[in-house]
Image 1: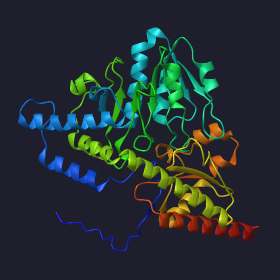
Image 2 (image 1 turned 45 degrees about the vertical axis):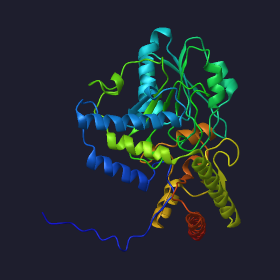
Image 3 (image 1 turned 90 degrees about the horizontal axis):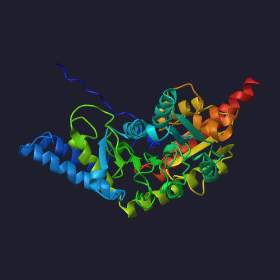
Image 4 (image 1 turned 30 degrees about the vertical axis):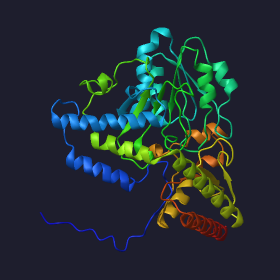
Length: 400
């Protein structure tokens, strides 16, 4: 077979500002996975030496993950294929296991589709779901939550931080309210794991979903934290892996890579990332303001927000046009969630925050920062947005 050679010598280095969608793997993670793929190929469920070697690596990784969220035991960690599987498992299997206690579930209007779609499916099966509204900052009211909570509520599933606008939810306060209630408390922590200090015991969290590729780890691996005493059948039927809680041969190299990515995120490293990312936010806002760009932030720059996500309304410029022009300039940003980027449907998050008639819905972009983001890249983003806005408005004026 003829070898195919791709010449990338003239390729433009892209400025990647879509880390909420996915992140590049850290060099340490790549090295860890390469080593395990080359040297640890045994099935972790077998009893001979190669299997025991793989099993030991997997269990050591499980302990690292458990420690990262202050789980009471590593047995509370179930490895999954990622956030979507974790969300679907927590939601649908809780409904299956607890429907005799009630059929009421509480969530928010701005959850990820991996939460909303299984809930919609449950509604078709006779479950009742309350979708809590959010304010213009993308946050729920605890008073609304207390009013919605009922004796027959069996599950509360509320994300820790929103993937489109970066708003954080009052997870600790919700946990306090629910600690003596029958409802199990699940949170989608895909955007917050590795950035915030998560403590499932402090916050009375019963289930928590994550995904490794958001923290410079590999794709198609995540974990579902399930507190001891929370029992439901496995979503995936098959073998007895993960103590009969998740069938399928374990991906040991990916699990080891996930643990390595988690190890890199020490409390000091997370604090440094938050400070640096917040600085990038301020740089964007100051730069666009100084250059006369007419824009507003969707959400809030201050307060309870994720530091790596910034959603901005650039007035008069459609999301598609701005995103396309930035792409031509070698800058990658998003029009919202990566999971709905190919959809013609408006952002359900911005619609919930501002109403379906708001121009923000069709004129907003999301940029999100990562470990590799630099101040120079933010400066280039500001300069390019400014130039695009001026050019498009000039062309529009000439057409008139």
